[in-house]
Amino acid sequence: MSQDTSKRKSPPPIFFIVALGLIAFGAYKFLPGLLASKSSDISTSTFTPTSGASPSDASPSGTIASGTIANRISLGNQILLTSQTTAAKEAGVKAFAKGDYQSAVQNFQASLQQNRNDPETIIYLNNATASKGSFLKIAVSVPIGSNPNVAQEILRGVAQAQDEINTSGGINQVKLQVEIVNDDNSPEVVREVAKTLTNDQNILAVIGHNASNASLEAAPIYQQEKLVMVTPTSFANNLSGFGSYIFRTVPNISVMAAPLAEYAVKTAGKTNIAICYDSQAPDNISFKDEFVAALTAAGGKLVPTVCDFSLPSFNPNIALADAVSKGAQALMLAPHIDRIDRAISLARINQGKLPLYGSTTLYTFQTLKEGQSDVNGLVLPVPWHPETNPGSPFPENARRRWGGNVNWRTATSFDATQAVIAGLRQSTTREGLQQALRNTSFSTAGSSEDVKFLPTGDRAGKPILVQVKQGGSTGYNFVPLR
Image (cartoon, rainbow, N blue to C red):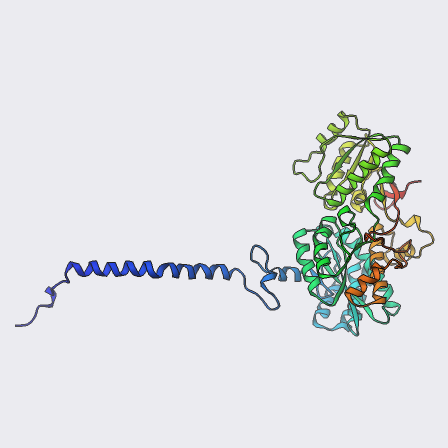
């Protein structure tokens, strides 16, 4: 008789109980480790180093900052000023990136025939020429993305100084290269820029940064890593005496603000003045504080208003009405360089009712172009003006090169580069350059007066008061106050 397999005997119930117990024990024993392993894979996979990168290059979000910074830095291998682009310039950067410097030189020269008012191309042309032999390297960091006009004003000064030294034989017969960096005046970007520049041992100095909040972010890094920083445009009081490697080619802000306050009270007779400033702009906070101190000393009075250009709720109508209702006879405007439009909106609402005074920041093409008659009569201090330097060759050389007058940012950037060049003549090491600039006898020819640094790192100098008047390409211009 055959066996009936369809009726095979089932295991006893105790078998299933034991099996389920073993499964549960295994899950308890091994599943946490499995999950922990999986979680670890996720966290480590958010950062994947590439060639030349390290975990320190990662941002807090876990992305690699080095790739982003690489897109912001150029010796001539990429165009950062996209508004100043020609086919020849594009061909030039492609040749430069390949190491074909002869073709790069030819294309950059061709581009300048079409557009001579392009400082980036002049710098790249000099860099390509210098690449054929030995060279010394510095960097300039400017806000190309957030404020291309100001960036170009600074780059023109650097480009002019670089071109003059290279065409005259170089620094002790060695050419100068300039690496351009776009920092957008962003503290987050500036931190990564400063780390990147200090890590490149070939870079001997940094010209920059532009806004004081950017310079204050970078200064501790440069000081710690012993890399000279010379800012041509940052006025914040906090930078004065910041460190032995920190310099600037503008005077202390107290020197700039005092003559404006004295003029307002003693010459214009405006004793009650309201102030609108930017609480996120350290240089304009400093300017406001120094202006108020000088205003009080001159016999004037601050009209207490709440007028902050940095606030999202800023309303020019409310700000002006508040100032007028409290008896203001004039307004002093001190905006961040990237929020000048808000000061212009207040001037537009004002329509000439109250006389306007301003911080040095307002000396821009944007102020004239967008402000027009609403900023007519605006008075502000600047460290340099082309009409007040008849004995200096710089204004005429700049006019010939760029096709028109340049402003104070170009002049102080030229001076910053001239100072670095003079220091590199004495020493081509970071420490030696710093010692040369710190020497009490250091002096070199600048755009007007000689460049000399005080023990604080500030430049010795005095301001010029200028006023907006009709004339110039925009219909209005800044002219020295007579």
